[in-house]
Each structure stands twice: as structure tokens, then as C-alpha cells.
Amino acid sequence: MIIVMKPGASSENISSVVNTIQRKGLETHLSQGKEVTIIGVVGDKSKLAYDNLEIFEGVDKIVPVTESYKLSNKKFHPEPIRIQVGNTSIGPDTLTIMAGPCAVETEEQMHLIAQNVKKAGATILRGGAYKPRTSPYAFQGLGEDGLRYLQEAGKETGLATISEVISLDAINTAVKYVDMIQIGARNMQNFFLLKEAGRAGLPVLLKRGLSATIDEWLNAAEYIISEGNPNVILCERGIRTFETATRNTLDISAVPVLKSKTYLPVIVDPSHATGVRAYVSPLAKSAIAAGADGLMIEVHNDPANALSDGPQSLTFAQFNTLCDEIKPFCGLMNRSF
Ligand code: PEP
Ligand code: MN
Image: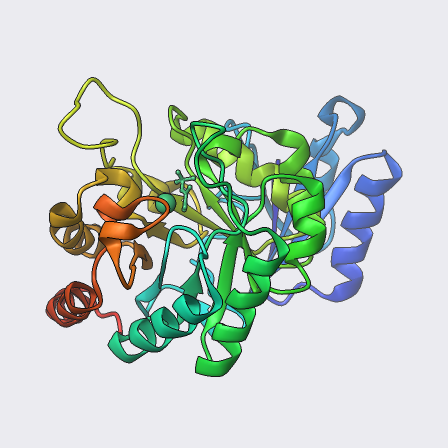
């Protein structure tokens, strides 16, 4: 349930509603806009005679929410939000690019990649230090050393940083080094991890699960937000279908669908969606045209020898071309880049 206060409702009006709800043992989450305050209510509604709330001073209306996710629901916060990530931000009128290798491999490599992606236009540097690989014999990432190399390369170039976390231990380590944590597709429904991510105090990039519906994905976001962290960014990275020509199938429709259901920023990862370098650029353009707030692109100094995801990684020259070619698309969508 969501309670919309009247424009100009006083802080006393708001606390009186909030206190009444909390006294019944339900949780409230405030969303304070310039004009209007919205109160999200989570908990057992049977304890609350909510008709009574309609006559409270300053209450405009009570909106029942049929979807199981509430705090990530557009009804709770009608305007799209901008989320600060280190020295940059992700939001409705810019196009943010996160770029870097699948996995951090060496210190020198991270510096080289950071300088090149920054020159082309990226503002966030990515690099996995804990890699959830299909085979236990594949490269598993450098752990804390990898995070350190990522942080140093970020500092040197002025890029914000992001890295995936796969456990509570990884979260506790990563928060010392990065500006944003990533929950990967394989962990989208690891509810314990989602709650820990919600308590980590950093923005969270939540990738869509391999076979997750949009409803399940928004419920996963709800786990993070309900721990008190509203800074969640959704990342469409392709889903499992019968098609084998690409690694996954990019669900481009997820972008406008999400935009109709949530105020959270949405970014698209055409690298993992396709698994094929040649398809990354066309899908990056379609993502912008569909309304995405950003892109996550894998870039490597030597893709042929990358320790993971070489076939989908762009060279510096290819990434540079992509950044040039998307400019008109950003212009058409009124996004600065
Ligand atoms: C990644 O970003 O490196 C990654 C493993 O992505 P996903 O979780 O989307 O497979
Ligand atoms: Mn990868």
C-alpha cells in the first residue's frame, strides 16, 4: 500500500500518519519529492484499518499496490531517479558507460584499460575479482588483489569503479575498494546476499537472472531496497532462450517494460547478452533507442588472450568506435554523453 500526501502536507501531518502505521507494527518508507511525499507501507495490512488513514490531515489518497514489489514500484516514486556512483551518476538524462575487462588480470592491464576506456567516454571502470565461472577449473579471479588494482586504476584516471560480489565475505572486502557493487545474474535470487548488499552502504547494480521474469527481478530489487538502500540500478544482460546463435537473448523489451513499472535506472549489457564481439555495438545502439540509462561493455587490451570472456570483449579501437557511433542515438533520446 502507498499513501500519497497532499502537496504542502506538513511534517506533523506526515509523522502522524507514519506513527500510526508504525504503532501497528508495519514498516514505512518515505519518498520525499519537491512537492509531494509518498509513504510506502510494508507489512501485514490486516493489522491496519487503512480506510481511517484517508481522513488523516494532509492525506491525498491511498493507492493499493497489487504487485508484490512496493519500494521499487513506480507508484511509490513516480519520477525516475539519479543515483550517485563515486564521482559520477546514473540517471534519466545522461548515458553512463561502465567498461573494462571481464576479470581483473594484472595491475598493468587495469591501468592500461582504465586510461583507454576513459579516453573514449566511459565514466565507470568494471573488473571482476570474484568470478562466478561455469567450470570450477576456469580462472576464478584475483580476489582482494584484483579489487586493489581496480581501485588504483580508478583513482589514477578519475573513474568510478564497480565489481561483482558473490558472498558476504566478498561484500565486506569490496566495500573498501569500489564505488558500486554488482550482483551477478547467477545470484539474482540469492536472497541472503541481496539483503547483505542492501546493508553494504554502496549503490548496487542488480543483473537480471538467467531465467528471471521482470516480476522476479523487481522483487530481488525489493530485497535490497527494503534493507534501507534505495540505490539500485537494474542491468538487462540477456536471458536463456531456445536460440543458440548468441550466448543469451537480449530482452530489449525489458527496458521499456521496466520504465513503466519502476523509477530505478536501467542499463543494458550487450556483451554478456550476445557473447559475440560483432553484435555488441548494434545492441548497444538499440538499448539507447529503447530508453536505457547506460551500458556495460567488456573491453580488453588483448581479447584473444583474455582469461575470461575474450570472444565478447571489444578492443580499444572497437570501443572507441562504439562510443563515437552512439552519440547520435544519445542525441535523439535527449541524453548527454
Ligand atoms: C560479469 O559482468 O562479468 C558477469 C559475470 O555477468 P553476468 O552475471 O551478467 O553473467
Ligand atoms: Mn564477463
